[in-house]
Amino acid sequence: MARRENPEINAGSMADIAFLLLIFFLVTTTMDVDSGVSKKLAERQPENIDKPLVKEKNIFQVSINRNNDLFVEGEIMELKDLKVAAMKFIDNGGGIGNPPPGEEQGKACDYCKGERDETSSDHPNKAIISVESDRATEYGTYVSVQNELLRAYTDLRNRLCQERYGMSFTELEKAFKDSARKDESLRKKVKDIKESYPQIISDTDPTSVK
Image: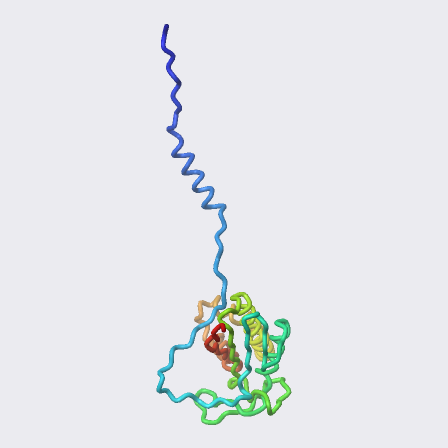
């Protein structure tokens, strides 16, 4: 009786199929991208440096506890109210600011639209926002707080830029970037708005969980 031979399976194209599947999964798979706050960290200062004296009224104290509760100037506050409170503090204009570059004396803020409360910040270039968080604070809460503070500066810059140059600061920055940062007139305008409302946000060391 003749012996029947088992038919062979042609595996010559398996490598091509596996390669095509690999490409398919690489193209269709989505990867998570880390999100956070774009921020330049301050350089570490020498221990023996003379720290400048800052009036308490020029510091806007923001704290987040381990339960993710937000406190502003010692009072609990909802996140949705933080931007307005920060804008009110920054734009208060209650006194004399630091001297502009190249000048010896500071000036009062002639573009601020705040209440000019003598118990609040003197000038936008003196207004410091201090953020303190607990080590157990959720990262998402911390980022949300930082975003609201950045929005406060963005709104103030947009308003002033619209008044001075007829466009928002967001549009001005985009135009400057589109020019490959070579347009000197746009550069001066961007610098003017940033110096009028300098972004001064200080992160203090997180407190330890007890």
